[in-house]
Image 1 (cartoon, rainbow, N blue to C red):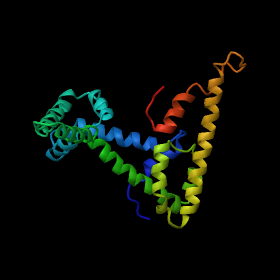
Image 2 (cartoon, rainbow, N blue to C red):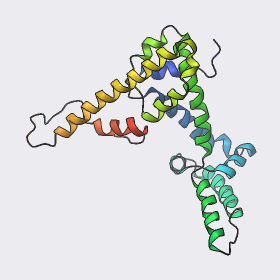
Image 3 (tube, rainbow, N blue to C red):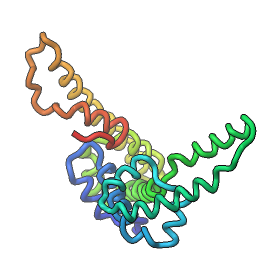
Length: 226
């Protein structure tokens, strides 16, 4: 079976206990792209053209800002601002002003890093399905997961067909792992909330101090850190 992306990171991510192994894959991809856009991409014409056109979203711009290369980032932001200025005409009426606002708003959160990361994550999603169908040891490993964050669960659902003849078994396992993982975390979160009830005898509630952050990340993706 010829896969569309290297499978070693998938094996590594699924072997590590967590609430979403695909988030582990995304973090790896994102860190590589952040490093790339602070180093070799700074002076590469092809990359600069993409940055000028798409820019960076708020999340990645914040991470780039703390990434240790202020000069490299400044060079990219400088040409990006020039590009934005070039697309702000002088308007003379309310209708034109609204059209301009809509146009600028659409470009406000476009991001070259998101674009490239999403493309890689799509390849990971259908490679996971193919591995479930073709790697004899992978389904057992898959069935040990605690499910996925909701955004990555949705992503995996979109590519179930890549499991071919094993698509039915794959999607059943996928949904089962998701619901079981979310139920487990929901129970932990409920136990966490009981700590704040003066009538509760379970004041320590060992093992669920991070239940709230984990539940948020389960719903929205890896957005908060304890």
